[in-house]
Image (cartoon, rainbow, N blue to C red; front, side, top):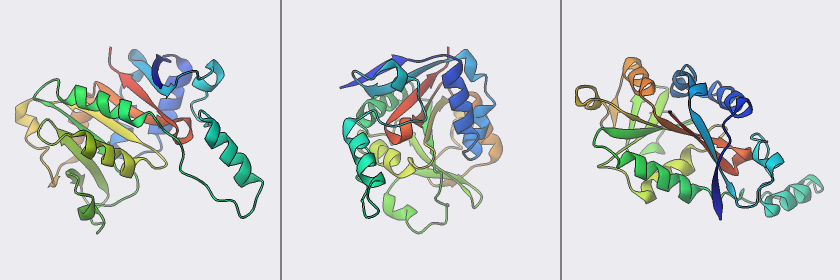
Length: 214
């Protein structure tokens, strides 16, 4: 069972800023927000100790992961099993709830490693927007958001950094964010300024943090 726990404080804000500084343009735009004025919640397994709860950079939330790490470290030929992360369904639920909360709501997933010209992009079947040749974002609004597609976006964009941000823009600006369309850096900045919720990967891939605007 996954719990959503309030972890607001200096330690988590420091973690968020350090993580956002490693991302691409959306991460860096959100980093410029006064995130200390918001609240932060963690998605962790029930029974997580306080020490583990606030160790945002460390894994070990699941016993099976801890055992596997010991096995791999003790054997040159050891193989790594997929990291446990039962929080994804809860994150998907939160994203869907927020997208469906208003007709102007939508979200972007920042793709950390793939390029807009990557031939594998078409195989994913995900809607996206892009900036130039280097910035790629998976796009969801009320017309394109399903639990299955959001789950796929989480799976493919969760790498050395994971970021999903939700925003709302007036229709005069909102029309610029349509699937498979190039957007300007200015539009991305407008999106970032109105972000009211974002999700960041934490716990060495075993959980997530959710920031919400006060």
